[in-house]
Length: 438
Image 1 (spheres, rainbow, N blue to C red):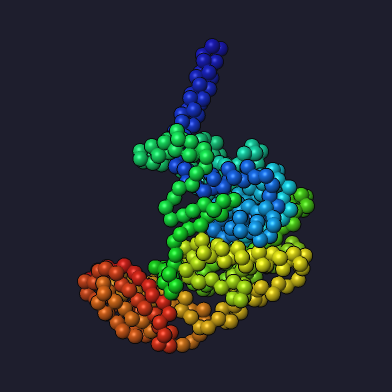
Image 2 (cartoon, rainbow, N blue to C red):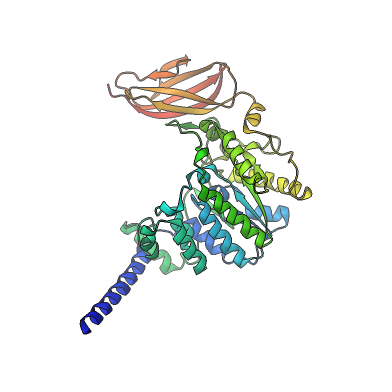
């Protein structure tokens, strides 16, 4: 009888020591000093009150400026968008927030990337985005429920351990020293944000400094269309749980879409199909869908310079969208949330048709021979003549060419620069690194 007891005690001691070592390793090697999710969640737990909560993925944190909204609307707002936040994480964060504050209204952002990538929770694997969402939750019941639902049972042990896969563990000694130093100095615990090219504007708002110069959108691949048919039952059921929670708490719930660049949406080619699918999904549940991708130019006119990439706003874009959203919110409040808003076109195609014909950017499709590239202009609409001037390391290689396939000169290597014209008028400029194989 004594040996089994000794073995059991040793096993318990091993588990305790191993767990403590994991805690120490995580404290030293977890590189979350400037993870804005950590700072956002710290702020979320330390508000006096919140009237309006904005929920979703990174579009939320890079979309609306709470301090500006507070000033215009006279309400206390907060954004809870975290990188690649899944709908289950959104549900968990909403549960945590409504357990802390008497929230009156929630706006849920309907990002098509989140909607089409949700899949089945029962087979999900760990990810950094799931860790970021779960790690900073404080309510143990909400955290446990989220952890158990968000990954398959095979990964529950990984979720339970402080150190593990997809947990921001960085073994770089320099980064580990910076983490330790920040904890010794106290800056880590004060949640001070220091990151080149990005500022934290408070209450969940993150402003990137990068600017896409007007007429310079391009892509080195042809992206697939939005996988509308991949909107899963688990996604729809979680939307239902959010609706139920808000009804139980007497919270007004609204669904909206953050504005992306027209280049990004026209690349996909089927945004209206997604809009219609979400519109129908919400209508069946008694809700409207306010899609700012369909916003009329007279209310929201974004330039390429208002984006830091093809689907996230920078500081300039955040201010513009916040101003528009506040005007929309006031109109919606006057209508008590019902009726058709004058802010929106009926379809995305209708919005594009209201604009002058324009080349929004260029998609490069390098061909299998690696010695030529297909040049695909992305247009909002129109049937005018598109032509290209092409330079390789400053040397002219083509002038006003209308060919969609460009063959690299023999031995060409370096930067290819392209200017695209619509009916002879320059519309956009793009760059691509090339390396001919012959």
